[in-house]
Length: 395
Image 1 (cartoon, rainbow, N blue to C red):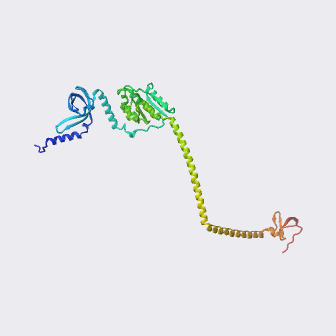
Image 2: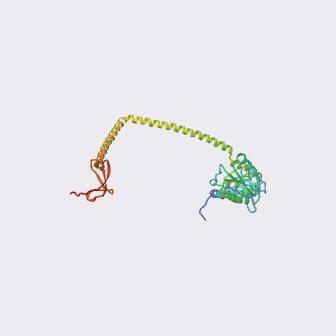
Image 3: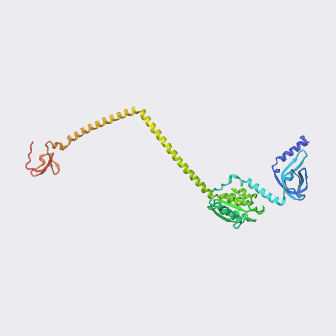
């Protein structure tokens, strides 16, 4: 026999801890049929069963949720609880939904949770909507009242935005395929923003905008997407994945249609402020420049006054040095002129000497002449042409 013996409290405590630690037993939705429904002190107690099994259910403060009838099929949302003291297993529910409406809601909720876990609704992936779009494409039914409202709203404030319409079905089982195909086309056409729009309707009519394929198509768009589906209280998966959710199509038009009149007034006011600021800058700059020039002038005067003796002494030395160099240069120039005059051949001729040439060549020897040669004679004040009559060799 095994020697490990525990009491009932220890056993039930272990069982209770196991139930509390199991995540799959908390915040779950269970479908089944109601049996033995009764209310005591504001709380409901009944059995939820299907064709094979059943479980005890407690709904605290049952007035806050749907009150079913025996035999009615419902979806109960809550957590499994093990009551250790009484050793009883129970399903504590927070809300009850009729199965007809609840099944659709359950499927939608499960899809929402799946897409949320996959990151399709994360804020980090949301693209900013341009503040001043030029080209806006509306993906909606061409003949519906929605597009008329959008155009009217935009044009009331703005006549610059170009409005393009991509005609799609916005209702019916295959409507989501039309919208997905349209998004793939318009996303490549360079629009500033896309608006997916549809008017109000029942939950069933809005189901195309809860389709998983549409959610992924919106997420894939490189162009910013605004979802404007249904009324303000209608929230679709398309709204959650879009970069911006507008409560209504009209609200989407108001969001993208910046007021051109206000914008012009704003720019006019900005220009006035810029002009005023520029004048102030110029005025302040001129005043600052005058102050700096005055300061420099006063500093120069102060510098001159405090160093006047040194400056005058330096100027005197500089003047003496220049005069000495000038006198020296004059003396050198006079000597050079004297030397040049001494070397000047004309100076020699002025002393009575003659310069003789024959055929433009100087005559340096009598032997180079013969009787009858024509020679040129030059002295200090002129020249003569002569003919040789006699040649004597004097040695």
